[in-house]
Image 1 (spheres, one colour):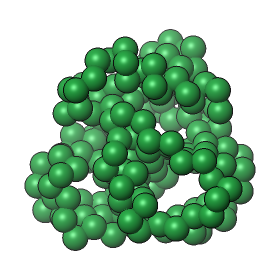
Image 2 (spheres, one colour):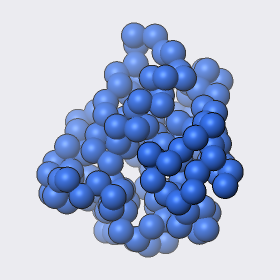
Image 3 (tube, one colour):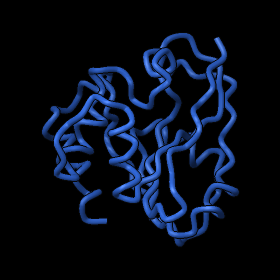
Image 4 (cartoon, one colour):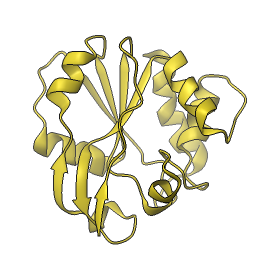
Length: 160
């Protein structure tokens, strides 16, 4: 099954970029980044930015923009059955050259998981001015770490 990523959530003044790999089936069904209710992405960000948690997608997007965070996926499209990154085949990366040129304040790129970082490094070349940080995946499939230990690593966002 061919899967396509969403358009980025960003503003011209975004100074931080968080990249996932590709939306999972639940996210694609809902047309929302991190739409699976067991994914901790939004819980982490609301906690880090000291805001009351919301399930409302517009509120979630506003949280990102208010804090100058851009959100996108490394891959533009791929073939995949299910939601696991390990099932991705025939992938094509998004156009980061244009995106980063249009967002000159971005200096740090965070990866939501090892696979996002690996695909980025495979397909995208950026110069040394970017700080690349790989964080543990917020996916429920990443059960090797506790919620708290993953959140502790994600808190680096608060210091950037």
